[in-house]
Image (cartoon, rainbow, N blue to C red; front, side, top):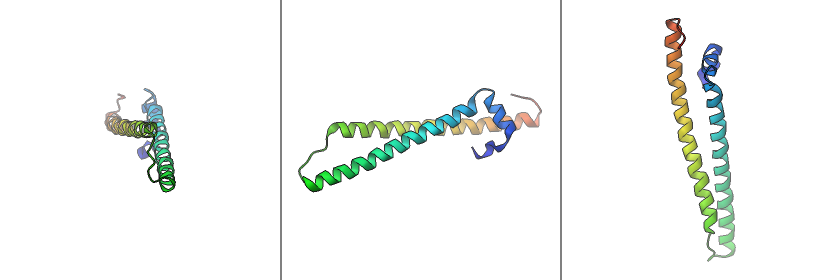
Amino acid sequence: MKSSSDDEFVAFLEEEKMFTTLVNSFKYTLWWLFVALAYCIILYISITYEHDLYPKCLVNKYLIVIYCFTFFYALIATLLSTNDAINYAQRRIKFVVARKTNNRV
């Protein structure tokens, strides 16, 4: 993403709406990672507090299911964003080669 300072390359990516898709993918992934982290922290604090008050308390299974869902969803979103970044780098290589030969891909 740091190499996107080249306006020609951004325009090249935007011809296929790839730059917008890439930025939106990163924003979406960041949001899910934040939600998963915040939920994990809140869950940890609440379970610790409840366990201090009631040592034999059990954790509600739905809380764990929600945690697992947000964790794995964020993990998959991170994987997909990483894949987008790799595709971005591959497009950058195509762009540099096309610019050297003065042909647009």
